[in-house]
Length: 280
Image 1 (tube, helix red, strand yellow):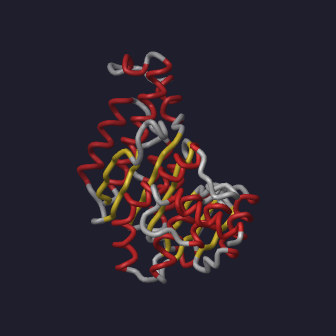
Image 2 (image 1 turned 30 degrees about the horizontal axis):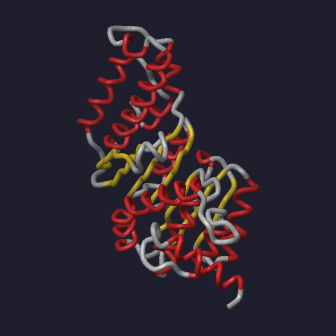
Image 3 (image 1 turned 45 degrees about the vertical axis):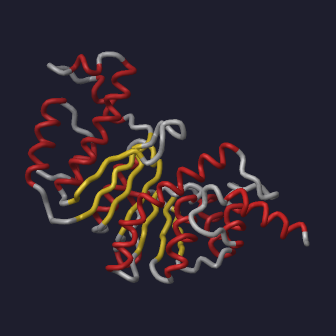
């Protein structure tokens, strides 16, 4: 038995605890290329934690993804702020590839990461996986359509750019895992009023600002006709940035959500830049 074959068998044993279904040889090669598995087929603690996060997120997204792909065989999944594209590659390996239709389009501002991802997609024969270099806000997909938009740990207002992108491309499903929200906390620092004791201390301002940011994002999506579910996508032992905002379009607009958003903004005395998608 060759050393390479022994490594693959060892990797399959390691992955058996976390990988959904039977581990394929191509999946082992992919995880090695993503540096989740070592060259010897082992999985260190940090890599195991990262892989479990992504796999759990795939599980949470699977019903929405299946719905989109069933209704639109040529559906486009836009993965924004891809970084090293862990989510996109694993989604393709587990869902898009075996299904035989649908495509993934990754966007990131860092040219070296996009080039690396393009190379890996070609080596993996992921023919329906493409990438583009650019700012999320400035990117327009071919045909101007994205049926599902994902943004994993898009930092600060990059999550807002993902929302703008999704609305512009009329996405049916939006999945966001926000990270490092700072804009609203900064605005609160210059705001006063009957609620200011909630953010008087810096630590409270950061935490409250992050919470308010995601509440506003959820209301913005609701007023555009999305049904929004907010949940943890992984335990706090894996990541402190563990909030998943999952939105599914089911109507054109929601006037009640608009009124609730207006009321909240008035009470807080802050207007984050994302409100530019609200109008009025």
